[in-house]
Length: 150
Image 1: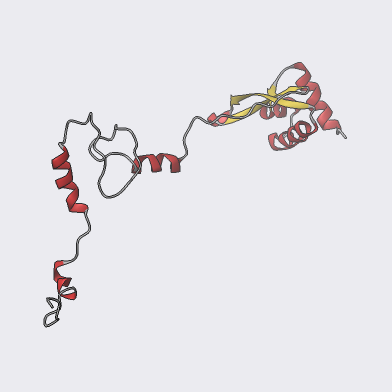
Image 2 (image 1 turned 60 degrees about the vertical axis):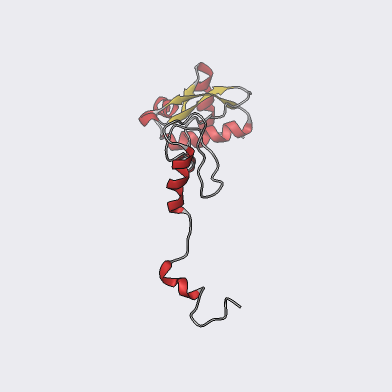
């Protein structure tokens, strides 16, 4: 069942495609109230989203069109902060512009086109990060007076 306010919204959309804020300004109503009517009309199949426009403050806003049709989905080109953080953690330490590679252990990958560091120098550098037992606690493994040599 369509309410009188929804009929007014349909009459405005019969003239041209508009966003919720534009319709609210035309009706002299609140944008939030008009948005609710638009969602209900879209669910009933009376209107559909024809495009996404830049609204106030740069936020993407739906533009509605009268009649049945396929609603256009918003395609986000921007990566989430979590995706960007994960990509950054997989970067090569020597060459941040090298392709992203999976972390497959304590040795990082040197790419064949990276001529800034030799493979030998890289492996010597990475030995610093290899786990090793604490020298002060070495006696735990070789306690004096034990029969380890027998």
